[in-house]
Image (tube, rainbow, N blue to C red; front, top):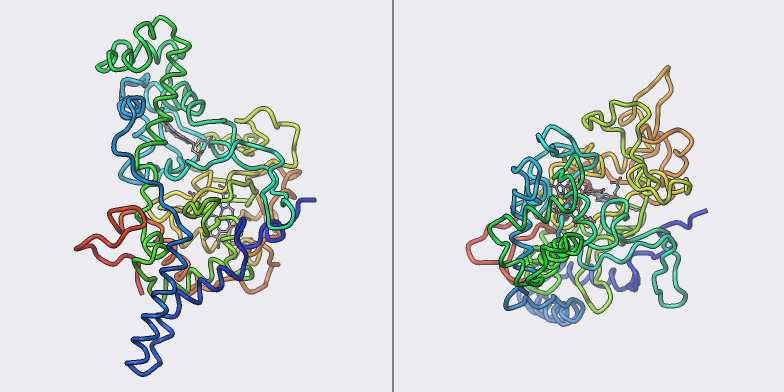
Length: 452
Ligand code: HEC
Ligand code: HEC
């Protein structure tokens, strides 16, 4: 039996609950001070601010922005935006991973069209490509180092929502060759497009004059360049959200954002931080809002995905059918990787199958999945088909032990409508673009994001 998430790593790996509570208290002082006389309030607020700045600045180390990209990464940029690398001639990586939307999907379609004629459909919603840098290697039995013993984490890491790709270099082969994505006939076809394209010479400069004579190697080089672009270009990890500004002492949450932050962390309310970790990682690196682990949440089946017209087809994540090697490990059926929540408010599709289109609906699902299942799943002959996007024999894999998904029919949901609005206000602080430098101050002339 899988241990409960909350038992596994409480509120965040390597960070104890009391630290987060103390931090919440510090962040709250600015508002709590409001009931003191004006002079004392000023002093108290100043002292609190100083303490908070000192504490927080030590915790978060934003990576320095490189003066320039490496030649590989510069080449990767050209490849990323090049529509010649698709069979239709009309699709690049950026068609699905829109740089204007945190490299997430360009619109609200559950899955994006692709293929030779752009009439094929993908199987999964497009994830953001931001903040993937610290993704660990895939492991079925990951352990996270804790203060006493290493804690069991279960499957975690890897790229794609089923962790099937070991690196971003390897991952790139997926979309380039997938018949429902860029749909190139072979690695050699991709290499030929580069060889005949506008930056063939640049490619040969970076990877060697005879690179085009070895298509297999050249195809790997395409992946390496794409990986270098994603790893080096600051647009993939800007850390310019209000959350980052608050954490580095340059801004304060509004009262509503602060309430949302507390609910996000509260193990008996949102409990979101148990999986979407919101404290710095090893070495003080900024919070990733994921623990990279896998969970089955029982998201309803999405009829908008063409593949789902076949009643026998189920996308079961770790155990396939897209991923092959774990087909027999049926205890993992239904599990998908926990995504980062940074920039989540810029998305219009949520979860691996894009079933939800608003944060509000998605939040209601989290807290009412178990208290009111009829709201989410079809009812057949009076019986509610809970977790209908999994074959019945695997429905027991769905997480029922972690709040807010540990309730029973008729219970009060873990969050009410007002609390949901508070959590959403907090989630909006995770959008990049609040400041113009990593963890920095608000840029002049910008409007306050979120609402009170
Ligand atoms: C047709 C739309 C489409 C195109 C074009 C596309 N992708 Fe993706 N991308 C996706 C989808 C869908 C996923 C999720 C796949 C999965 O979970 O199996 C994804 C996943 C990824 C991931 C893994 C993200 C994670 O969370 O682990 C990376 C990295 C990535 N794509 C990079 C690229 C690159 C580089 C290109 C261009 C060579 C590209 N993509 C082209 C749709 C697309
Ligand atoms: C037990 C671990 C766990 C908890 C607790 C949890 N999540 Fe998640 N979250 C996940 C996993 C796993 C996924 C991906 C599931 C899928 O796609 O099928 C996910 C997906 C999401 C997404 C979709 C993001 C995207 O890019 O599509 C959002 C938004 C989200 N969670 C917010 C929250 C909030 C807010 C809370 C607290 C109310 C919360 N989560 C609690 C594990 C968790």
